[in-house]
Length: 144
Image (cartoon, rainbow, N blue to C red; front, side, top):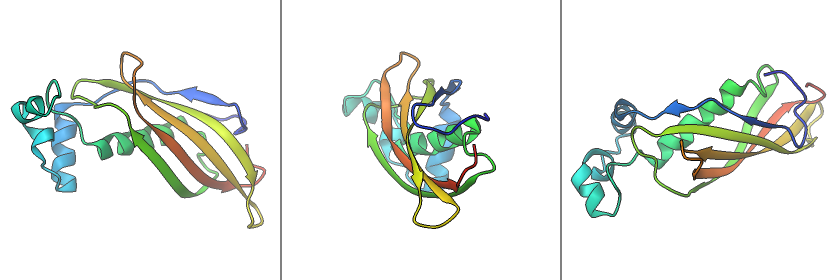
C-alpha cells in the first residue's frame, strides 16, 4: 500500500484464519509441543475452551500481516525493536486481523534514515484484542 507513512495513518488488514495445521506446524518448527497447544483436555483443564495457538505464532502472523500491508515495501532498512503483550488466547479457527497505526516518524541519527514507531493490535473475529504492541522500524529518509 503506497501512501504517506506519517503519524495518524491507520490500516487494518484482511482477516486470516489460524488453522489447526498452523498450530501444529508452528509446534514442529519451534519445538514447542506444550500440551496447551496440542491437547484439548489439557488446555480445558488450564481454563481455556480448547487448545490455544502459541503466543509467538500470533507474533509471527502479525509480522507477516504487517509486511503484506506494503507500508514499508521498498523503503524498509531494519526492524529495530518490538514490544509485545499477550492479552487473550488465539484459538484454532479464529480469524485475526492486524490494525497498524503510525505513531511517530523522526529522523534517525544516521543520515538518510528515519525511525518509524508503529502501534500494532491483533484482534479476533469478534474485535477482541488478543495481542498488541509496538514495532520500531528504520526506513529510508524522505521516502513515502
